[in-house]
Structures are given as C-alpha cells and as structure tokens.
Length: 135
Length: 380
Ligand SMILES: [Zn+2]
Image (cartoon, rainbow over all chains, first blue to last red; front, side, top):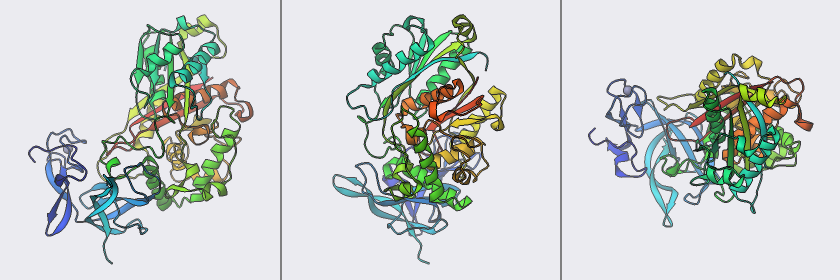
C-alpha cells in the first residue's frame, strides 16, 4: 500500500471497501512476518518491518465478547451494544452491534453501514456495524 | 533491589473536595509525609509528581504549595499508573546513587475534570465508536463468565469486600459497607458491571519519602519499610486473537518485580491491586499468579481474600472503596502496604505481615491490553 496511514478516521472512506458486494474493513498484513492489523499499521508491531500489504477483513466474523453500554460520554447515545468481532484473517475489531438485541459469544456477524451510536451536531453518525447473520 | 526504603508517608482523605485545589491536596500529603519521616523540606533533593488531568507543571504547583522549590522536579503522566511510576522513577534514581532522599507524589482533582464514564484518549479509534473504560472491563468480565463459569454474584462479592474494608479506613471515600444483593440491585453501567463495581470519581493526593541505605542509617529510623522491588512495563501491541482474561502486561511486570525481590507469588501475604472494576481485581490477581486462572472469584466468595483470609486483597478498600484519584492511586496503594507492615492499619490490620505487593495499571489504547503497569514489593 502506498501512503498508508497508521490511524485513519474511524468513519472515513479509507476504512472500508466492498468486495463481491459485501462490506469489508481495510486492514494490513506484514509482508515479512504475516502479522495482521486493523487499522493498517505503517510499522509492524511484531517484527518492526516498515510498510504493509492491504488486507480485507470480513465479510463475516464471530462475536468474541460484548457489552451493552448504559453510561457514556455526551458524544454517544446509550444504550448501545459494543462487540469485539474476531475475523478469520486473525484480527479482532471493536464495533457497534446493529441492534440492541442480546448477542451470544460465538454468533456469526457480517458488516453493515448503519447510524449510531455516535452523535455529531444532533445526528447519528454512520459507522461500520456488526449485524447478526440470519440463521 | 539494593537499599531503597520508604521513610515517611502522607495522604489526604479520598473523596470529593470541591473547595480545595489539586496543589492544596498535594501539599497536605507532602507535609504529612515529611512529618512522618521526621525530615524537613530542605532535606528533599528531588521529586517526581504523578497526575493525569491536572495540566502543565502540576508538580511545581504541588511542591510550591508545600514550600519546596528550586529542586529537580519531574512531572509524570502514565495513565492510572502515574503515581506508582513516580515511585518507580524515584526508586530508580536512588538505586543509581543520584540522590539519598527524594519525594514521590501522586495527585488528582478529578471531580472538576470529569463526569460520567472515563474514556481512552479521544483520538483513540475505539473511543470514537463509543468504547468507555467500564465497557472495556465489562467485555473482559463476559469472557471470564464464558471461560470459567464466573457469576455476576461472585464479581459483586469483590465490590462488597472492598467497600467493607473501606468502612474500616478513615481516609476512604465510601464509609458504609454494602451487601452483594445491594451491589446487584444497583444500576448497570456497562453490562454485566453495576455501579458499585466501578471505581468512583475522586479527588486526593498521596506522597512518600524515599531514602537510600546510607540516609536510612543516618536518620536512625526504626519505622522504615524496605522497597525490595519496583518494576514498570508497558502493554505490548497485541497480534492475533489473544485471551482477554489473561493479563500479559501484569504478569511481565510481576515477573520483573519477583526477580528483583528474589521472591515468588507464594511469598506474598497481602496485595493492593488496581481494582478499577470488580473484574479488574480478578484479572490482576490471576495475572500476578496469586490464584490460578479462573479461580479468584470463587475464592473471594469463600472469604479467602477478606481480612483474616489466606491472602487479604485491597485492605485499604481498593479503588472501589477507598476511591480512585488517578494520579494518587498508585502512591496510596504503597502507603497501605507501608502502614500494614508497620502495624499501623488500625481495624484492618493484617497480623504477622512480612511481605506486601502493590500492583497498579491502567489506561487503554487501541491494540494494547493496558498502557502502563507497575509492581512494587515491600518488606519489613
Ligand atoms: Zn511483521
């Protein structure tokens, strides 16, 4: 990847990409040791190699753990559910769950662009969410 | 670690101090520590001052309010480990022979800076999608439930234990014991954690006078307590899908401290650990290898971590009971061990104590399990 940023905007356009019509997150992998990261890392945290290859995360993952948040800072609108999603590419990413239904550890999720829980100028901000895959 | 001793300790009551400044609180702690050591302001050769949100030159304001100026002063920010990092830096300088008598101070006036849930730094990518500190630990608790069969009731028992201990500590923020049922009946902050399983917003300050072996002999002070280990480590960037219930950072720091002290987990007779949340006490204690992984919450239910139990934990009340003025916390933990070792802990005294451990860690940044961790071990 050329001009790889180590800290992209959380909802900026360089965070996600569609592959085969399905939403994926853009991460990176180290060409030297294979370690995978989200967001992309300019320097490998495992071996120190500089530069990384683009690595798409998704389109599905599993819930590693979760919490329904009831108290937060003024920029957020509780209650909302956060999940850590484990991707098959060996990367764990935090994201909101697309509804407040209770997930279970191990649930399969896909990625979806939805509003919330962040509020800016009175509006919910679109963010990449985890959405339970219909069983 | 050769020849570093705590010669004096001082701290303010922890709680809400709306009519006092951070510098004023720090001065009370510093003067208390000097009096306790029986030394004067002119005897202090250098000082390290830990805080998180108190702004530029907090150390100079704090020491100035206590009549100390002109000496080397270093301000230390290391998230919740700021105060204990000040102790680590002070001990390292003494060990290097740079000084013979120095101060380590921690201070925070948090009630004027924050309301509600603390977050990682606002630039953090996870903070930007709503991660709060309670939710970080809530998600670890959920994994502990899943992997070891831990129950909400067992975690609530940790909060009840610490608030009981706090009721025996005149300087603690919480004065009243609370039952496990009352903890569970409280509002949820981030599921599965209830309000009383989360450390409160607190103001306070704490200070210790550290001296070299040479200075200790000159002072001829019988009440000095030996700091046999002081270790600091930072969180490693996590690669791959790691087990969130195991604190690699806590263990690496503990291992360094155990090696310095020539002691192991089996030698520790009491511990003050960073219980910013009920689950945090669990993952700290297990990360220090003081109980096997998955076993600590059950042991708390059996009373093993209570006063009179096999390993009393957070006799001061911990962060949950004593309060958590971020910068002051790590110093106050060491003060509790010093008071216990000297036999000055009043109604919460641990009998026959020879070795105590203070563990402090905190902060969160994306990709690391924790930002900074310290382990200090003290002996008679
Ligand atoms: Zn690498």
